[in-house]
Image (cartoon, rainbow, N blue to C red):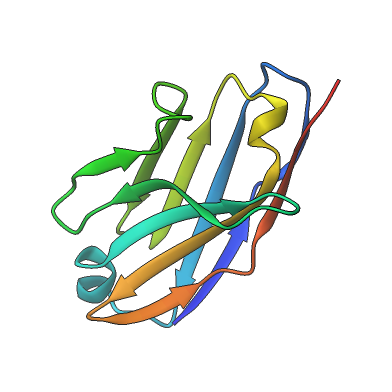
Length: 117
């Protein structure tokens, strides 16, 4: 399984970005049943969980992003997404996608999000 993250960039405070994580070399049934998350890591800080999507469709968010971020997936396209709205400088970080396929963990390469005026 390979994960390719994209969609990062530089935005002004209050702006929006949509991150995508394309999975390849994975069959549909495995992707559909996987649990998935987005993490982020800012300079000098530990990696933190931002949003999670369970195999049953339950969604959970870090308190800092509730109401602003939305995690979703498209099974047919084998893509995980993170819609980020009302971005603040505190959201600036490298964002990583992660999926757990039957106990095996896979990470994307990370995509940089910069928020500054």
